[in-house]
Image (tube, rainbow, N blue to C red):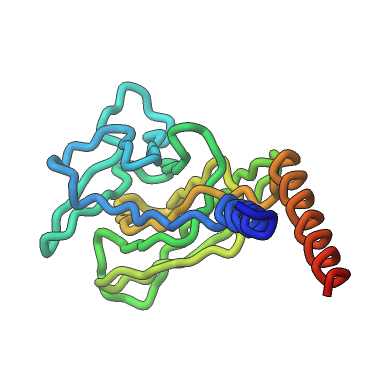
Length: 201
C-alpha cells in the first residue's frame, strides 16, 4: 500500500468516526402490557416518572393501545417524566409526539414544560402547548443537543400521552489527538509524495 492509499484510508476512517449517529425512534409497540410501572428501558434509553413525589406508587407510567398503536401516559398530574441513556452518555433529543389523553374538543391548549440538562452542567427550558383535539402532535427541539437528560411535566393535567421519541447518541465531532495526529501525518506524506513526483516530472 503506497502513501496515497494510506492517507485516503486514514481520512475516510476519521470522517466515519466523526459522523453523526443514526437517530433511534423510540416507540412502545413492543410493550406487551399496559402495566408499565415507574420506568421502562427501550433500546439504549431509559424512561422514568417520579409519580409527582407520591411514595409507594408503582403505576406512574401507564400504557394504552388505540388503533393497534401502543403509547404511554403519565398517571399523576404534575409528575416529571424523564429520558436518559442507560449508559449515562450524551444524546440528542430531536422530537416527540404528544396527545392529550382526554380530548374535549375545545380550543384550549395544555402546556408541557421541557427541561434540558446538558453535558456542560447547564440547562434550558422550553414549553409547548398541546391542543385539546383528537390526534397526535409532533414537536421538534433545536435545543435538545448534547444532553445528559431531558424531562417534561404537565402541571395542569395528567394523562398526557407520548410516543415516537426521536433521539440519537451525540456524535464526537472533535477528533481524538491520536486520530488527528495520524491524519496530519498522512496529509503531510501525501503532500511530500506529490512534491517528489512533480520534481521527477
